[in-house]
Image (cartoon, rainbow, N blue to C red; front, side, top):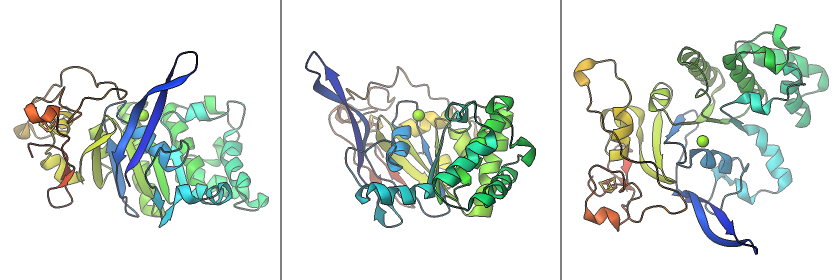
Length: 313
Ligand code: SF4
Ligand code: MG
């Protein structure tokens, strides 16, 4: 609720704060148990910062993070440690978070032992079970990370998160580094795991075609602000925000008759240290009118769980 994350910009000998990068600038989302919420936007839109602030990998500036009725930022370090297994983060490149000298089985088992979740003699069984559910086998337990392909490494990353029996998985661009054919396999794995384990996902991606097949609802972020949220089908059939329309126009669709006109955005995403006044999107919006330069559009409910921030809607 109203999450903000500002990073101070320091300057000079005295290291004074001269401004802030407003990475996340007042966003609110609700994720229901068992659903997959897709958070979409260009790089630099603040998506990853949202994910990291939720699990307190990065401390928020303000706002509330409510998990199962409890504000995570009200918890003591001990209480947070107890709850942490329930909230797991999966990154784009699991290789960077895997110690090259630690065998895969140990890397996955470590977390179990750290959190004292199962007796030591049961660790191996749990690791084998989770590897199997991620499409790997006990044969892989004694291997080192460099012996795996990109797709297999992401399976290891998923297994490591899953072994803790989480309720919420925040996946930050989990397939962006993979070949398209492998992407589909990993997305199917996410879907199967959700069905068998009742997981809830916050799925972060810059690519709408990736979230299309997995997400129940989608939120589109731009420069730290939520521009539009809607159920998946509604967003794809009836996008209302010009930014969403532009993103969607770049997604290939299988039915040629429905061919959308490609909207090419001019320029780059402005710096979040100095975002445009009014609608943050006005410098790139093909439909901008005068009031867009000064008036911030309200994030309004336009019916059927569809919310949008644009003066023209
Ligand atoms: Fe474009 Fe104006 Fe709508 Fe912003 S408020 S998206 S600038 S039309
Ligand atoms: Mg990111």
